[in-house]
Length: 275
Image (cartoon, rainbow, N blue to C red; front, side, top):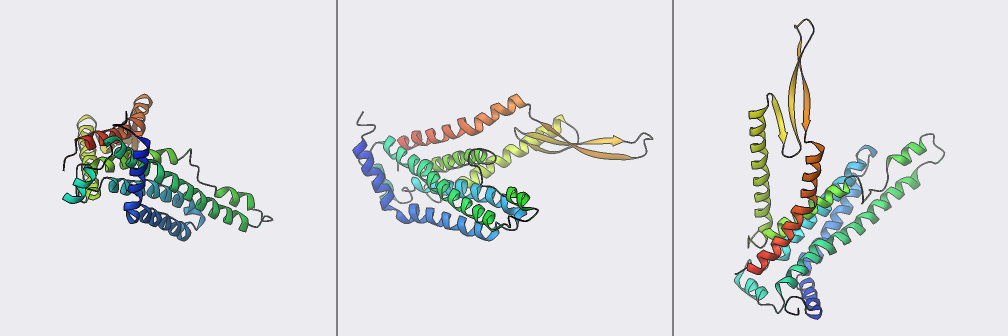
């Protein structure tokens, strides 16, 4: 049991990981939070774009920041000395993996979510307090802006993005010793484009007038309509969506199975890692 996990040993490893690279961990997290605050403060007005700013801040702050931080966690292999030193640390592979998971997958999201909620609630509260309660459109303006929900709407989708991209970065940092973030981004982009164009090609072979095809989602086609006298022809866009049952299966795969596999494979890869 102690060979796999020993709490005092893990506590020392966790403390060492946090303190030996303060600029990469604390400095980067602070930079993300500061950028979020500045972006929110500058672009939250006028009202029509406030909700979009909330979504963009939440998406890029959690997913983008979490993915970059995850790429740092196993960034010890850029040099022989650092790689050899990390592999010979008196800690199990599970403890090293768990340390990375807790920092990138738990600690950063918690800090970000708390900070985002404080910033969002502060700006929304400030806006509500500045409204003229006696104005005829007070209720309408008040209801226009609300605190971004962290348990519904766009949030669950962003959580899935974070889990997948952070897991991919964590795994990629064990395959690419240098500039792993850029290389993983290129791999993800290459896979996405390949799947997209293969899916589009198959759709065009099966259907006519295909305009676009999104993998595991929908196919956009043009339907030709002719007037009663057959003199006027128009095209109407239509979308063929994935059946709801299949869509739910795909949703489960993306939200739960794929990120779980990425984070677990990272542990397997770490156990096999040789520098």
